[in-house]
Image (cartoon, rainbow, N blue to C red; front, top):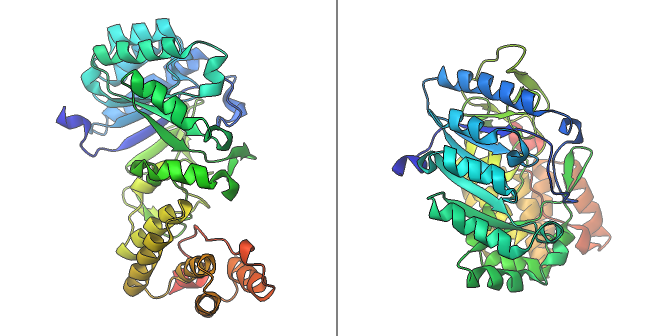
Length: 380
């Protein structure tokens, strides 16, 4: 199954907005709740045709809503996997559709079934024992699974008990960092979501560090070339947070980008970052952001200092070094870093805000930034 791990272009397809769970932190846009099964089938046929014409093997990540609520979902998956690979984001709660999937789809064409526990919502629908049995049934038939646990703040106190339960049933669950509540189309991510207990849990699972959001505006990105996002109504976007459409698979044709282009969205989510062409200095800044979110200041400082040696014009790097210095109560050093940030980008709101708060002694309001390039840094 070496082909399952090879790099290949990717489609994120939101097949439906409908779900049998009602998680309050769900990111599904309400406007897509009304799109029906027939439209899902029509989008599938058009999308498969477009991908086949590229003469490439694509990785189609199917998400929702809950994909398994779509009528004849197993047939759609069977059609896609004739020439392409699939991953499915699912709550793994629907027995009959899952059994149809098992009987229809070749597991060697499935990269992963990404099953979410959604522990509180699941308790309203079924016992954990049923969920466990379903996971083992899929494993028995050769399907690769990864089971995630959305680490909503209030769940951090029970995570290890739930982790132990699944471990006793030979299932590893991986905490998925909580990214906030959807508000006006964006995640409202507050730093209190990452309390000390949550950070301690996330530190135990190194891969969770990859799940972060960063502003990469101005950085070269292959989204639109090696990645597209398809919505339930057939709309095609360059990436997860793009507002401009590339086209619609149902009503007109669209063209893939031929080369990488500058990112033009405010925030890039963790899944999109793998399509960004980071320079070495930019990669170090990203590593620092991941470390800062977990409170790993020593590692973050090392990454930022390495990045500045590669490119000394990162105003945002100095902002984050100032944040670290304040956490370590090195206020003179923090002042020096803020001055350097001001010299590089004097008019940026974040620089002005931090300078003002430092002068007022409101050190707890000097947060780290996830923006790689402030305006002047980008021009230089």
